[in-house]
Length: 455
Image 1 (cartoon, rainbow, N blue to C red):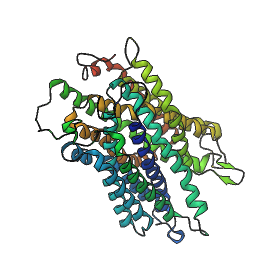
Image 2: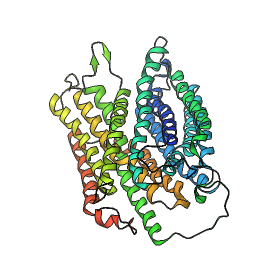
Image 3: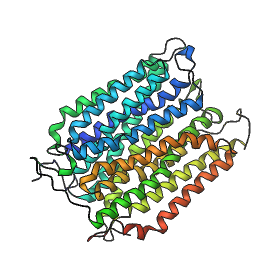
Image 4: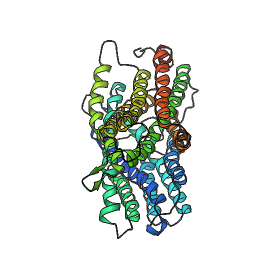
């Protein structure tokens, strides 16, 4: 029997749920802080914020997003070559906690930059390495699509809880007069990260041998002499496929992140967002996204497993990612529909129904669920084990590029008429999806071996 706590039956090992709950804690902190940062930066200094304009605030928020997706490349390199990933993960959680604590006492932009740096370093040690350990828990690669889809639901439990609770902490529980509880909001994120680190240390026993040694050595109980081998031809082709998929990931995440700015802006001005005297917080759009992903994770996980067990095999990853792009493109059309309902170009006294924002969140979440967890699964399946975490990092670097770019893209889009912009974006995404469908068979040849995957 394998000492990894790995499994081939339909029932997932306890170690899988342990890793998934670890993601829940970390994402709860991250999504809370991501939403909170923008409002803290733009809030008037006299009322407890830093008083920056929206453009500056968007760029700083984009840095938080971007650098937390760049750092895993370096964290992955350390886990590949030098230190077992299980030891880096709690260290990363503690460093993130320190970063969010700095945010809780921040009185200047410089301290916010320090917070972003610490959170990025901590994420680099945590995020990609935890995904890589998850991949080691399953001997049967057919189970990976299902596993990562289910794990994505745990990720979004964190998102849902964090973005639902954080407005209550900031604007209700700890608000003092006109001063929101920004400090307590960041402190909430810090505490969650410290809990996450302690949780992971106490749960090491569930992992068996997974993550004990650097990934280049595989899963072993004892240290083995390193034997350096060049990548084979099929391994080189698979590395190429990972880079290609990562390019499409840039396109996806660029418009995915930008969608939040689009919704926040439109929702504040043109959507009926009041229930009686209560104004629905924009953070709850993030909560809707988390809720739909929680619901969709197990459903899509079952679908992937059934497709994988068909005689003709599973639908190819390239087709799945193409469908994800189509869902994302269609989500933007909900803003077009909202504008048509209230009257194109009408003043902000004319409001559209909240149903369009709800439909936007559903389509956005479907696109995300087709794209993000399957990318992690693809890399776990096909990356050479000697560079597993680095290849995980390549996937996250694509998100870094999108994270750095979405603020600039949004500023560019604002120069155009709304109807032009939000019809143009779906066209771009549809073209990208069509390319994946058209060249599906050729793309599959990049990963085929003796047991080729389905077309």
